[in-house]
Length: 146
DNA sequence: GCCAACGTTGGC
DNA sequence: GCCAACGTTGGC
Image (cartoon, protein in one colour):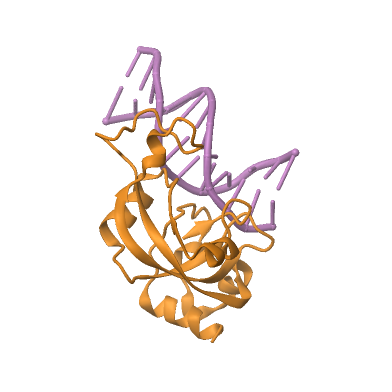
């Protein structure tokens, strides 16, 4: 899962413990949260628009997809006039802090490992803010920092 | 259903 | 700040 650290960083999650993952406004990313993410599933926490961008720690799903109520909050930056309580359109999962890496696994690093060749986040134009990660790729990245 | 215009993401 | 790579919108 990608987050801009200026908006929501791994440190914020560490201090808060859990959070709603609101604001996903892309159908593919929503479907992935809704259809795939189960309680206990591990998450690679990625800082986008960061210097450098990369994976900074781990989280896990602590609540499965439920309506993203920020979508019908007119005061929210994630407000969507098409959404309502009756027709939420958007969903979010809740995530729980697991750990912060001692050092970032930067995007540049990621591109250099043949073990994770083809991982979505390393591909050009891969803009999805929620992306599936294979167990093999996940395990490899965790092994780099433990 | 096509596609041009526009908006967003996110690395660089 | 630039711009490639999408995704969305809306006229036709």
